[in-house]
Length: 219
Ligand code: C5P
Image 1 (tube, rainbow, N blue to C red):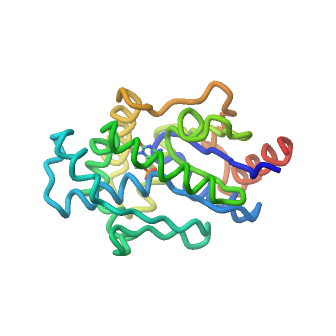
Image 2: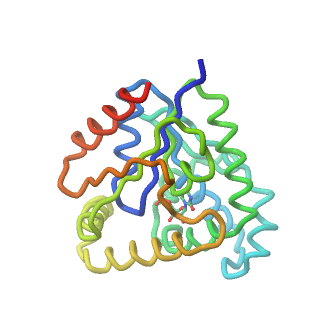
Image 3: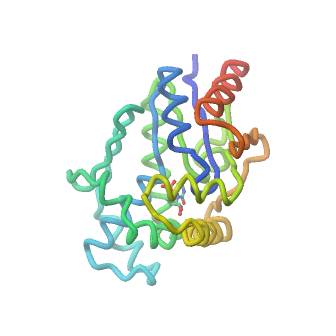
């Protein structure tokens, strides 16, 4: 039988990563964090001093970057040219410029190809991102669009990063969502057939339970 693909998309800070890892762990599926891939590409380009205001320079330099993603939900690794970048890709410099890199069509083509290879090689996988249900895996039998109120997303993200200014965090999330949802190349969008899950008033366990229920009903 065809292996199961669960697509989980949504805006920044909606709890996609913890949720997706939890769902994959509960269902013994692999896990792919596509945001980490765009972040790792951004880290590599910053290391190479590429001008991130220049889409042509980004596209050219991106060809030489070799990304590898581990798919264990309990230990999702990410390497650039063999270097473990799991820590550095969460830094403010990467977070502040990743949306510029992710808007470049050639970068998206490269990473979507890698993502589809990983999906094809897996034996069932949860894939999280912005365009999984719409572009990367349009045939996925389960598509979730995970949302939460901006204030709840900012509070969650501030708690993760240790930031004390949740208003600034909320503004930064809103800026990133604005760029991600207005770019020309596969913008952040709910697929027509995605199920919206609103995590604003739910605990992490409740969101995981909800999605596991949707997956069980679909297979
Ligand atoms: O999910 P995360 O916040 O780590 O994603 C970082 C950035 O990567 C997003 O803000 C977006 O610009 C980009 N991204 C994307 N498409 C995906 C996943 C992430 O454009 N499928």
